[in-house]
Length: 540
Image (cartoon, rainbow, N blue to C red; front, side, top):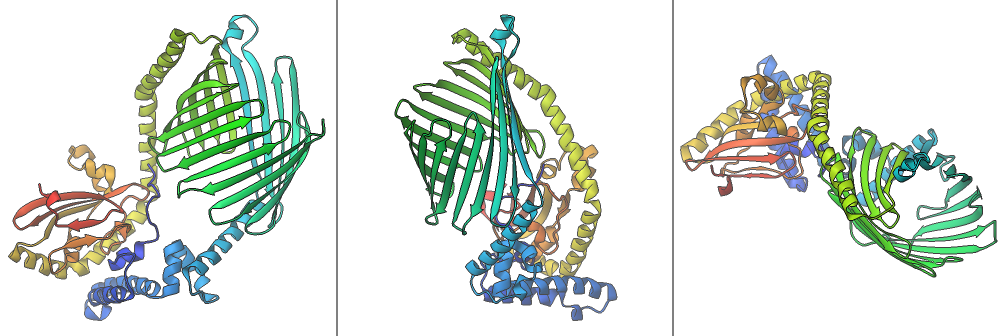
């Protein structure tokens, strides 16, 4: 499983100096002086120890040089070492975080535009309508088919073009259409699109979009049908309601005038939306809710009601690879009972709706849902899940082989860093033992899964040990004179002096056993979580 990219990033230098990402300049200087006393090469006579000290002292100096410079620190906080190494700090003097961020965003957009300009972005879909009742009546199972394709290209910095077409066949009738859209970015806050299509929907149109404020966007469109000369005018206003939600109002005037009010909310674990639309000859309301059970699977429920629709949809999907997702949906409505299968890969879609029955028989509807759903869970339990477990294990093994050299070097560097902490850590530990203070008796950092399996049989101990590093010594070194230990929130613990990342790409945790005032304690925290000990809630 890949490590989730959640929480603050670009914090390794803060971990190295053992300071908070909100540390003041005085705190940064104080931390630098403390670490310099430990790792300054002049303190050591032996050639081997002097070499180790020099290597780590250079790391400390680099961290201090970046974090003590206001401009470099701002760049690092936004884009990490990539921003520092870009050489931006050598250019025009930028005094505000907003100016630095704006300049970096400009450079990033420029790189993205160059990348997009060199590649076309194709997308398309295939829809195959199948009908079981029609097949049973001897008319063939294929009810209809539709295909759509589009290619987008950035032809210049401010201009993009999209060319598309679609074909549809239903029974003995069919048709198609071709369209072209030219988009021009007039400024950083406004754009305009010109569109035209031929075929079933022959029309010409223009649409302009403008960001009227930080949280509001307005879009106005005008389209004219080339068949009957009718004109349609549309206006849409979108407003950001919160960090995860926005609402919109759409007004359309023409042969089929309508007004629609919608709302969407998207969070890490769930998303929902709803819309109410009222037209001159119709009305309707739609809503959907999607819950993400993990990074790979989700469930969905949706409903539609109105003058031309009444249906309920249940289902879910699973990500089967980095680019592919499979979905299975069950729909009951006035048009009948359907199973729908979808395969999404990149910008391509394959959609296969299967009409099971034109009649809304409650017993058939229940069976059509329960039997395939039960079969799905059986297959998932005995076929799909074992397959993915085997595949994930294989991928973890391959990842371990690829990073073996990197991890070996990181472990060696961590061991060397710990050597120079040994004397101070031992003295601190002895003082804490004499006063009944805080003593870390065991600390392990590494794979979340490996830490959970650390007490299993001898057969898996070698595999578990390869994904864990013992960090008891550096944590004893970090215990303050007052008998407390704090690891800051939002800082990856692999960056702490004497730590390393023993399992790149895997979710990590820190497990700690400690004694305080004659009592035993233990605690386990995620990689980015704060750790503050001692705490009574950790008592065994």
